[in-house]
Image (cartoon, rainbow, N blue to C red):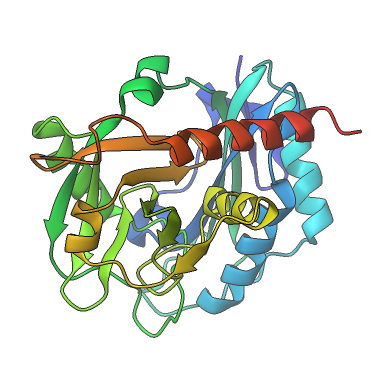
Amino acid sequence: MDIVYINGLFTPLSNAQVSIQDRGFCYGDGLFETLRASKGKIFRLEQHIDRLFKSLPQIFIDLPMTRFELMTVIQDTLARNSHKEAVIRLTVTRGDTQSNIQIDTDIPPTLVVNIRAFIPLSKAVYKKGIKIMIFQERACSTSVLKSRLKSCNYLSNILIRKLSDENDFMEGVVVDPDFGVTEGTTSNVFIVRQGILKTPPVSPYVLEGITRQVVLEIAREYKISFIEERISLEDLLKADEVFITNTGIEIVPVTQIDTQPIGNKKPGILTGFFHDEYLKCVEAEKNPC
């Protein structure tokens, strides 16, 4: 039986309820984090929490607990569930209010921690690579904010993923006419060209993904040249290697973009290297020295 944490209480998932007046339900007014756990160890927990606490003030939500208290809640929720390999969904909304879209700072936020079993991608995905679909349009951003947030308002991503699925692509990537390649519906994008790793810089259109951070850490450790800069559609299509990253899929090679094959139509050497090193990072966190 799966156990969910909601506003200080633990309850079976079948009994879990949030008010129909919750701002997350009414307006998508909130933030979320998706974390991975293996054998009771949560990968990069502190980085996820740091990102959340950096984002909350930007949308005027004051979560009445410390980072340590929140991490304790997450770990406690995980311990109450039996999944050896798990995905943790942490959601913070502006809370239950009958007001219009104006912000009422007296209303306490809603905090939900939900655990589900982690279902990995098939090994064939990493061996053969995937196809991604390009959407040439204005990238969405949250007005007045200078950085990309993990907002609960996910409609644009959902629609792009739906259109990608219908055309037999695993992911959709937006290419903005001014900014260039931004990100996938749930992933960051990397390319390799002549041995140099490139990824779009963090911006209102590109989230500072946790797996993205790990890839750059690996590049620094092994002195692999990398650049965070604008990537055009032409750069993307002419890349020797392309891969996407997120917490759930890890590092996935891209071997086709729209109808065009990438490189030699096989996952690249550096892509495989980064995935191997990423898995070592996960293993090291499960079994610290």
